[in-house]
Image (cartoon, rainbow, N blue to C red):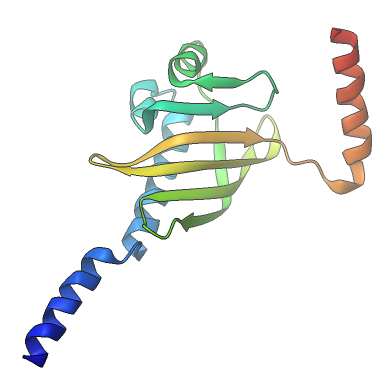
Amino acid sequence: MFQKLFGIMLVIAAFTLPTSANDRADVSEVLDQLHTHAGNAAWDQYFALYTSDSTFLGTDVSERWDKATFQAYAKQTNGWIYKMRERHIDFTPDGNTAWFDEVLDSLNYGTSRGTGVLVRTDNGWKITQYHLVFPIPNDIAGSVTQQIQAYEARLK
């Protein structure tokens, strides 16, 4: 009886463990593919990695785009190249949502940071939100934010 009960408990545990090394590798692979497809301007493959209701937050405060708007913007470009330098991935307790942050290198912009959320779907992990920022070193944050404030004041 004990062996049968123990076996059932193992089966239940196997199906309820929220995340595994495979989940982390799968999420990382989606993000690697995202950067590869963006660099090749392979927009069909790139946007297949997003959910239909996804949001992209760009570096400009006005860039809060739904998938269709972001697709229209991207398809006018030749792509963009970001190389991942460092990545962190975490999961919700149920293992169905992952969030990440990654430090990226760009030939055009230097250091940047991507953050976002992926959800587990019947078709694998999909990006539901991606946010690209230019991290500002604390030593120059005051002068950069003053430039942003002066720019915004001119727009009013």
